[in-house]
Each structure stands twice: as structure tokens, then as C-alpha cells.
Length: 504
Ligand code: ADP
Image (cartoon, rainbow, N blue to C red; front, side, top):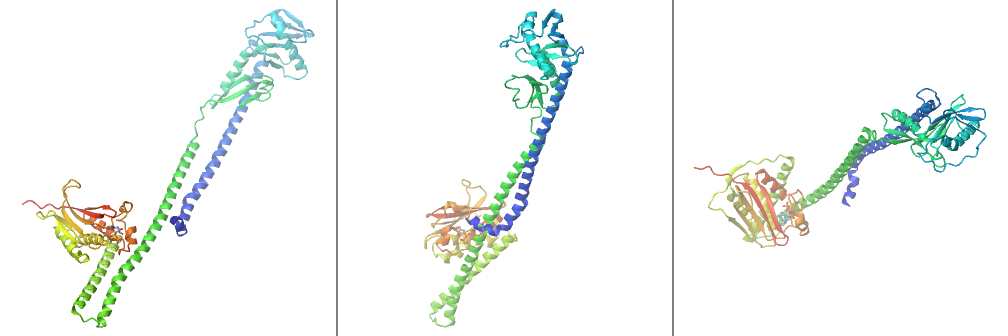
């Protein structure tokens, strides 16, 4: 919801994103789809055109072959020839002459076994009636000089301009046409075969990818893909990659916009909280100083003990203000990348002890210091002020986030190597306070972050302390970790590399 609320403020980012990515990407996708569709339509049209052309060529070849009288023409492969002489048909090589007027009623050829031998009898009984019908149809203009009889599986041909004809079996006819088709389809991504169909079904409605041969209503040339050119074209690949890229860019862009938007929301909320917290941090010591100094000015306090306490309180509050200003200045330096640490060799325990003592007034008598390696010296290279302020910061937090008078322990020593790497010294600050919920642990070192409970309990703070401590520790080549349990307490641990003393 907060992201949605922030959308108007991020209109520029989203507008730019839409303009630079989504708009061109969508236009590109639409153009690509349209282009590809056009290309597919064009390719399909060209393919059909080539197939029609092949059918035309094959038809012309077939007509050439069956109507020619050359040696290699269809006639040379005929079953038998016939001649029309007056009212008779003469089958010269069979010494058979049949009257055209006779046997007009042909028997239907229900089953005509393939192996039926060609005899004078079968010519008279099976072929002659079909030849009669063919000639009748020819005279009536219902065929162009060639007619196929499906059940007879033979083509009856009358040679143009002659009183002669022949009967050709289906097999050599199919072989011839198929061979021509193979030649014509060479180099194409499809092949074609001749199919001779049933006059009652196929001729009326040719199958998909089939063309009826002109002048031969029962013949169909059927095209089928060979797969040679079926692999996707370069353009199709390019399109698939482009779409994938488009989806990726759009998704990444959306994530980016979402992240920028939510980060902006979070940062702006944190900044507002920070300004409020800083103002609050300044106001309370200032009010105390003002109230105390007014009393002093009015000379209403005569008790020397009270006077001393008032002065002490004014000093304390002023120091608190000073510490806050120092912290803010350090933070500003870090933000600008200008913070440099001047590292010098020194004793860690000394720094930790000074930090503890500086914090004693916050909870007198409750902050204990324990040097676990008191006998040995733990030398480190440190920026004294920065490191001491960091340890103080941890102690101040421990006091701030634990009940009054509950103990705070500061410990330092050498890492024994069981739980952390050897060659490091540690400083720990442990309290028995409110603890940190696991959901917040990962965020406490972020600038401006303040825990929910910390804010609800109205504890003073501006949310930059731990970010500063982490920066300092990192600048010393060390690390910071936290161990906490809600309601039981927290332990912060700094690890810093030990500088070994040169052997004498
Ligand atoms: P501040 O204390 O000004 O809020 P810090 O950066 O020092 O900012 O701490 C960040 C948050 O970490 C605090 O708001 C608090 O929620 C949590 N925190 C830090 N130290 C402790 C502690 N000792 N006990 C419980 N919570 C802590």
C-alpha cells in the first residue's frame, strides 16, 4: 500500500521507464508479430504457387506422354491397342473385331482381381464395354481423349486426330507421374505423389494439400512435407529470442522500479523519523539547561548543594548535546565518504575501561568492567576516539534498552579460537534488557533504523549509533556481531585484530 501511495511521487521514474523500455518494447513486439505473420502468409502463398506450377507441369507432361506416339511414350507400355474402323473396334494383335453397336450394357466391375490375365475373353467382357463408354463420352465432349476407369485400373486413350487408341494399366501411369513429380519437387521442402481417387468421394472434395489434375477428374496430386525446410527460420529464432529478451527486460525493469519506489518510501520515512528524533534529542537537554539556568539567573537557589547539582546537571546535558553533535558530524563525514581513521598501536583494555568509566554516570555502580586477559597485553591498532565512542555507544544502548538498575557488563579479552578466529581481541557489552526481535536483527546496523519497541518505549535515539559503530569497526579491520533474545537481553561483540608484540 505504501508503495502505491508513493507512486505519484515516483511518476518521473515510472514515466521514464515506460517511455524508455515498455513503449519501444511493445511497439517492437507488435511490429515483429505483424512482420512474422505477413512473412508466414507470404511463404505459404509462394509455396502453394510453386505446387500449382508443379501440378501444371506434371499435367502437361502427362498429356504429352499419353497422347504422343514416340517410342518412349505411354503407348509403348500399353496393355493393348485398338483401332476404330467403321462401326467396329479392331484389336489387331488379338485378332479380335467387335461391333460398337453390340454389348452396350456393360457389366459393373464389382471386383476385378489384379491378377486377372489379359485374354481375348477379358478384353471382350471387361475392357470393350469401357472403351465403348469412353468413345461415347468422347463424342459427347465429356472427356478430352483419355479416361480412367477406377475398377478396371486402366486408362483408355484415343490418339488425337487418329482412329486409334490404347489401354494403359494404372501402374506404369502412376510410376511415370510419380517420377516426374520427384524431379519437379527436387530441392523443395515437400514431395508429391499421384493418387487416383474414387469418383464418388475424392474427386468431389480433394484432400488438403491435393490438387485435381486438369482433364483427369479422378487424378489428384497430393503434396506432403518432407521436413527439409521445416526447421524454424532465422527470423523465427530471432523473434523467440527477442520476445524472451523483452520479457526479461520488462521483468527486470518492473523489479527495478518497484525497488526504487519502495526504497524511496522507506528512506523518506526514515529521514522524517530521523529529523523528528534529532529535534527531540536536542530539545530535551536544551529545555533542561534552559530551566536550570533560569532558576540560577533568578537567584532563587541558595543551597550550595543544590547549586552544585544544578551546575553538574547543566554540564551533563551540555556534554550530551556535544556528544550528539559529534555523532551527527561523524555520521555526515561517513556519508560523504570523508571519514578517515588515524590508527595507532594501543592497549584495547585501556580504551574499553575509559569507555566504561565515561558511561558510569548513566547507571552508577551497575556497569561492570572485566578484563579477561588482564595479565597479557592486547595490543591493537586503533583510532582511540572513534573506538572509545563506539564502545560507549554500545554501553549507552545497553543502558537505554534495559530496566533501571539492571547490570551491564563490559568484557574484553583474547579470542580463544573456539567460536571465532584466533589472533583477534574482543570487546563485549552485555545487558539484561528488552532484547531485539529476530526480524530486526539484520536491520539494526542500517542508518536511521530504529527498532519498533525502541520507538514505542519512547527511548531517546536517532538510529545512527550502530551504523556508526559498524563503520568504525570495519575501518579497524574488525567485525561486529549481536546475540539477543527478546525479554532476556543482548550482547554486542566487537572483534579486532591483535597486533603481536615483536619478540625480544
Ligand atoms: P538508536 O539507539 O538511536 O535507536 P542505534 O543505531 O544505536 O539507534 O540502534 C538501532 C536499534 O537497535 C535501536 O533502535 C534498537 O531497536 C536496537 N538496539 C540497539 N542496541 C540495543 C540493545 N542493547 N538492546 C535492545 N535493542 C537494541
